Image (cartoon, rainbow, N blue to C red):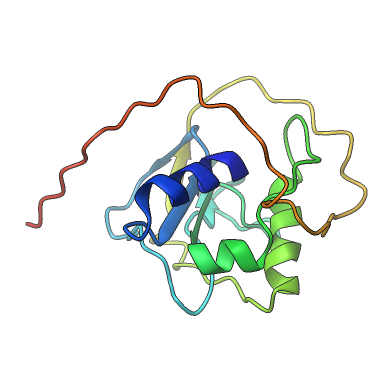
Amino acid sequence: MNVAFNHASKISAPVFNCFMFHDVDLIPENDYNVYECDQHGPRHLAPAVDELRYFLMYNDLIGGVLAVTKDQFMKANGWSNLYWGWGFEDDDMNHRLRHAGYRVSRPPNSIGRYKMIRHEKQVPASNSSSYTFAGGVLISLSWTVISFLHLVVHRFRI
Protein backbone atom coordinates (compact mmCIF):
# COMPACT_ATOMS: atom_id res chain seq x y z
CA MET A 1 0.00 0.00 0.00
CA ASN A 2 2.95 2.29 0.62
CA VAL A 3 4.16 1.73 -2.94
CA ALA A 4 0.73 2.65 -4.33
CA PHE A 5 0.66 5.78 -2.16
CA ASN A 6 4.16 6.85 -3.25
CA HIS A 7 3.44 6.14 -6.90
CA ALA A 8 0.13 8.04 -6.86
CA SER A 9 1.75 10.93 -4.99
CA LYS A 10 4.51 11.26 -7.58
CA ILE A 11 2.43 10.99 -10.74
CA SER A 12 -0.46 13.15 -9.55
CA ALA A 13 1.13 15.88 -7.44
CA PRO A 14 -0.46 18.22 -6.50
CA VAL A 15 -3.82 16.85 -7.75
CA PHE A 16 -4.44 14.14 -5.13
CA ASN A 17 -4.54 14.98 -1.47
CA CYS A 18 -7.07 12.36 -0.32
CA PHE A 19 -6.27 8.66 -0.34
CA MET A 20 -8.78 5.83 0.20
CA PHE A 21 -7.53 2.50 1.46
CA HIS A 22 -10.46 0.22 0.69
CA ASP A 23 -10.82 -3.53 1.25
CA VAL A 24 -11.90 -5.11 -2.04
CA ASP A 25 -14.53 -7.26 -0.33
CA LEU A 26 -16.62 -4.36 1.02
CA ILE A 27 -19.51 -2.78 -0.89
CA PRO A 28 -21.09 0.42 0.47
CA GLU A 29 -24.80 0.16 1.31
CA ASN A 30 -25.50 3.85 1.88
CA ASP A 31 -24.99 6.57 -0.73
CA TYR A 32 -24.75 9.20 2.00
CA ASN A 33 -21.38 7.86 3.14
CA VAL A 34 -19.26 10.50 1.43
CA TYR A 35 -15.83 9.40 0.25
CA GLU A 36 -13.75 12.41 1.24
CA CYS A 37 -10.96 13.26 3.64
CA ASP A 38 -11.19 15.36 6.77
CA GLN A 39 -8.34 17.85 7.17
CA HIS A 40 -8.60 17.48 10.96
CA GLY A 41 -7.88 13.76 11.00
CA PRO A 42 -8.29 10.37 9.31
CA ARG A 43 -11.79 8.99 8.65
CA HIS A 44 -12.81 5.37 9.12
CA LEU A 45 -15.74 5.06 6.73
CA ALA A 46 -16.76 1.46 7.54
CA PRO A 47 -17.91 1.23 11.17
CA ALA A 48 -20.88 -1.04 10.33
CA VAL A 49 -20.22 -4.21 8.31
CA ASP A 50 -22.90 -6.87 7.85
CA GLU A 51 -20.51 -9.75 8.72
CA LEU A 52 -19.88 -8.02 12.06
CA ARG A 53 -23.64 -7.51 12.65
CA TYR A 54 -23.21 -3.81 11.82
CA PHE A 55 -21.38 -3.35 15.11
CA LEU A 56 -17.96 -1.74 15.63
CA MET A 57 -16.01 -4.53 17.34
CA TYR A 58 -13.65 -2.17 19.19
CA ASN A 59 -13.03 1.58 19.22
CA ASP A 60 -9.58 1.36 17.61
CA LEU A 61 -10.85 -0.54 14.57
CA ILE A 62 -10.06 1.27 11.31
CA GLY A 63 -10.15 -1.68 8.90
CA GLY A 64 -12.28 -1.77 5.79
CA VAL A 65 -12.20 1.77 4.41
CA LEU A 66 -9.81 4.47 5.61
CA ALA A 67 -9.58 8.00 4.20
CA VAL A 68 -6.38 9.96 4.90
CA THR A 69 -4.78 13.08 3.49
CA LYS A 70 -1.26 12.97 2.14
CA ASP A 71 0.04 14.85 5.20
CA GLN A 72 -1.74 12.52 7.64
CA PHE A 73 -0.32 9.46 5.89
CA MET A 74 3.20 10.91 5.83
CA LYS A 75 3.06 11.97 9.49
CA ALA A 76 1.98 8.43 10.46
CA ASN A 77 4.89 7.06 8.39
CA GLY A 78 2.65 4.91 6.19
CA TRP A 79 1.66 1.30 6.66
CA SER A 80 4.10 -1.12 8.23
CA ASN A 81 5.83 -3.35 5.68
CA LEU A 82 6.27 -6.10 8.29
CA TYR A 83 2.77 -7.63 8.12
CA TRP A 84 2.18 -10.59 5.83
CA GLY A 85 -1.10 -12.43 5.46
CA TRP A 86 -4.42 -11.24 6.77
CA GLY A 87 -4.96 -8.92 9.68
CA PHE A 88 -3.40 -6.54 12.20
CA GLU A 89 -1.92 -4.09 9.69
CA ASP A 90 -4.91 -1.82 10.23
CA ASP A 91 -4.51 -1.98 14.04
CA ASP A 92 -0.88 -1.04 13.57
CA MET A 93 -1.88 1.89 11.35
CA ASN A 94 -4.35 3.06 13.98
CA HIS A 95 -1.53 3.16 16.54
CA ARG A 96 0.66 5.05 14.06
CA LEU A 97 -2.08 7.62 13.49
CA ARG A 98 -2.67 8.04 17.23
CA HIS A 99 1.09 8.29 17.84
CA ALA A 100 1.14 11.07 15.21
CA GLY A 101 -1.49 12.94 17.24
CA TYR A 102 -4.60 12.13 15.20
CA ARG A 103 -8.02 11.06 16.37
CA VAL A 104 -9.94 8.96 13.83
CA SER A 105 -13.52 10.04 13.10
CA ARG A 106 -16.39 7.97 11.71
CA PRO A 107 -19.82 8.46 10.20
CA PRO A 108 -22.75 7.11 12.24
CA ASN A 109 -23.37 3.36 11.85
CA SER A 110 -26.56 4.14 9.93
CA ILE A 111 -24.42 5.85 7.24
CA GLY A 112 -21.17 3.82 7.29
CA ARG A 113 -22.81 0.52 6.35
CA TYR A 114 -21.10 -2.08 4.15
CA LYS A 115 -21.85 -5.50 2.74
CA MET A 116 -18.94 -7.93 2.80
CA ILE A 117 -18.63 -10.18 -0.23
CA ARG A 118 -18.52 -13.80 0.94
CA HIS A 119 -15.11 -15.43 0.67
CA GLU A 120 -12.94 -17.96 2.45
CA LYS A 121 -11.82 -16.79 5.86
CA GLN A 122 -8.11 -16.09 5.93
CA VAL A 123 -5.68 -17.33 8.55
CA PRO A 124 -4.61 -14.36 10.73
CA ALA A 125 -1.05 -13.11 10.34
CA SER A 126 1.41 -14.60 12.80
CA ASN A 127 3.22 -11.32 13.47
CA SER A 128 0.46 -9.63 15.46
CA SER A 129 2.16 -9.37 18.83
CA SER A 130 3.66 -5.89 18.59
CA TYR A 131 3.16 -2.67 16.70
CA THR A 132 5.90 -1.13 14.61
CA PHE A 133 6.81 2.53 14.41
CA ALA A 134 10.10 2.11 12.61
CA GLY A 135 11.29 5.27 10.89
CA GLY A 136 11.93 5.57 7.21
CA VAL A 137 9.20 3.18 6.04
CA LEU A 138 8.11 5.45 3.20
CA ILE A 139 11.59 6.70 2.41
CA SER A 140 13.24 3.27 2.21
CA LEU A 141 10.79 1.75 -0.28
CA SER A 142 12.07 0.46 -3.57
CA TRP A 143 10.06 -0.98 -6.43
CA THR A 144 9.98 -1.45 -10.18
CA VAL A 145 6.98 -0.42 -12.27
CA ILE A 146 6.23 -3.20 -14.74
CA SER A 147 3.25 -1.50 -16.35
CA PHE A 148 1.01 1.46 -15.71
CA LEU A 149 -2.60 2.02 -16.73
CA HIS A 150 -4.08 5.51 -16.44
CA LEU A 151 -7.88 5.61 -16.28
CA VAL A 152 -9.95 8.76 -16.46
CA VAL A 153 -12.78 8.89 -13.94
CA HIS A 154 -15.70 11.15 -14.70
CA ARG A 155 -17.77 12.58 -11.86
CA PHE A 156 -21.25 13.89 -12.36
CA ARG A 157 -23.01 16.11 -9.87
CA ILE A 158 -26.73 15.53 -9.76
